[in-house]
Image 1 (tube, rainbow, N blue to C red):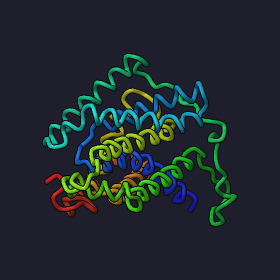
Image 2: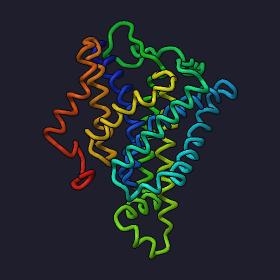
Image 3: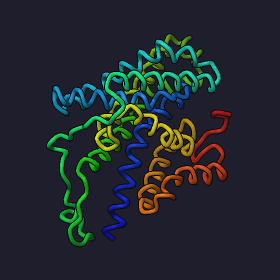
Image 4: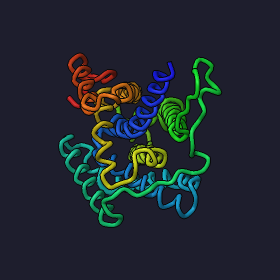
Length: 295
């Protein structure tokens, strides 16, 4: 029972990292129709910014400032580049954002070097949680890294906040309506262009949150964004392009699969691709994908 419970927690923590990155990806695609392959680079930038700010001003300052900085970077990226590709084929979007990601990675490598840099945890997040003291069905001495539990909690709060924003606010209503009838909203005097820029900024902000809380786990190096981009994009595809709920389900599936195959190294390397093949053979649009998306 102890072993199964710890594997479930590990799967939940792995799924939390993929979910945070995939949420930004699928939010941008679901509302703007843009396939953003530079999203991994945004995660990497957030992790580096978090290391620098935490070292100079403390970790709490990094929690506040890094998402704000990524939000500004996201809006600048949307206004300066992405908006010119809204009506272009998805292949063009992939090529330009993937090229941008490579440029950012090489610039970071030039400035900080190619090796990992240490990311020290704050005192309040260091150490382990004694799970056997709180969960009655566990036997003996059972511990789990405290920071990984914090990551799961932050991921859940981010998910709930995003869903509430899109479903229960006027901003979310305008954004959802703008994807269906943008011209009608313009006739009504609504500046939908500004809303689209904010949506892209929100996607980058979520990448910022992921970088701050996921950086200490995934390590901080120029290649970390690319390493996480492929499984995160698979999460989006398995869940269904543009489906936030589908991305969450897929992230949980992949996290659990990786956790329960940890002792079989050869299987763990390919398990996410096997899941993608099985799901897409049965449901070509993904678990909760909608007709016409990417078709």
